[in-house]
Image (cartoon, rainbow, N blue to C red):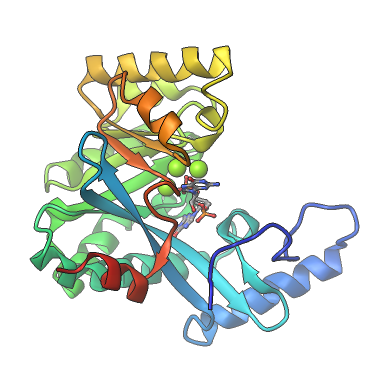
Length: 277
Ligand code: C2E
Ligand code: MG
Ligand code: MG
Ligand code: MG
């Protein structure tokens, strides 16, 4: 059975005019109940991240899914933005961290340098016990900190800069890495670069999918690449679907690729089947 998302697979949380407040509340209620019911229907998929030169596995990104009888398979863009503002999200955020770390831990025997990327929502960071909380989860799962990479998005700019700087500093000292996700899609990216400790920049598929024909995408991606080289950041380009795009991007500074060309997000079982040696 395929877990991959197709357009039209979902009906929930669509930003259309037909879904009224009552429907939305019902949807939010269903998802809250699933969280309360031992995270029923939630699971993580894992998408490989590869070395840009060798295309060998270097890392993996955990991506959440929710499957529900009424709504079917719901992609994260349709529930994370709504749920993250809800108080129930902090439990789900902890569950994501715990599950990703314990799922991927055994694979470190085969891939000791594997980087496990986990997306954070700004509402998780907003909590003043975030550092203690993540340290607690890490000690529970016994996951090696050097294998952990936390992805933050530009929406985190809504947070206090001092707060951002503070926790990235504290956790970086413990060898946890930070990736800035969806770079260039929001505002004030440069501020973030100046103020917080970043190891990796990720470029969104939006800048990549038309890169062979779009002059502006070429200019943008080229500029981000130069910036990363100067700052000595790793650069991961996402959404690579064709060999032509890969070859084109190999001409600029880039350290890692992620995209359907290498693999779609896989269930834990599929991931193990494909990658454990
Ligand atoms: P993201 O963190 O930028 O994740 C990359 C998205 O691009 C994923 O979508 C992935 O499946 C998709 N993708 C990767 N390669 C390709 C490709 O070659 N072609 C195409 N068409 N798509 C590709 P997904 O899994 O639907 O996730 C969407 C967003 O939802 C994520 O974007 C992230 O912002 C958020 N998200 C996903 N899981 C989590 C989570 O556990 N926690 C939080 N806070 N957010 C999450
Ligand atoms: Mg991400
Ligand atoms: Mg991304
Ligand atoms: Mg994205």
